[in-house]
Length: 291
Image 1: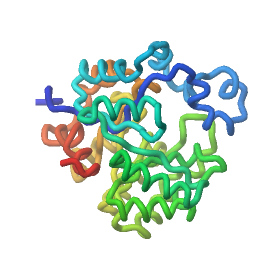
Image 2: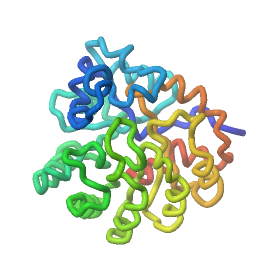
Image 3: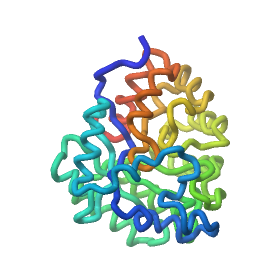
């Protein structure tokens, strides 16, 4: 049968075009040291992608409409977005189309209890269904298992929402140490109730990633920032065997991948027939508490 059509895909990482990309990603580039990252790139991982869709759609008065148009065209029923910036595109999108967007929020472990209060406020105000963190992108950097992260994990358990966390070598030219996949093991040991979803591939430690998913019930993997032709073979094999409930679709529009590229390549991924609905929809709904 292959990839089903009209399944109502849930995209757990989608965004909106930004007019000023360099300003938007300044939180990343401020700690880079190479000239390209600081002066030439508008998108911090630009060297990795042949095309950066955001460059082509940044000049718009309605970024929400651009993203929604792409979602409609490629069968994306709902997308998970960042909210909390009053007047920002995410908050605007949630107000205008609450049935199409799933709110999430970011977490800065360097902010201490203020970050916890912010998470609670946005949970109560916007109904956020997830919280995200980018360990290599924090400044100063904070590792996945650093005790500064523990208030996040504790509060996520208390609120019953998952943590989506970048793991593996980061795309931007930042130090990778905070995102080593083995660090997740300690976190899952200390927080057995936690639902933890990796972002951005876990490379080059994908064998370790699936082994840890086998070990820890709350650990999941999402495919954000990877074109389907580059999905790691061992992750596909894991989904097709014992991990059908653990691998979740995530895109990367408009940052580094177009939905056209993702959905054109997607049918060639060799998932088994019973894996497709879980990968594209059911796992996300369950993890986000929306099923």
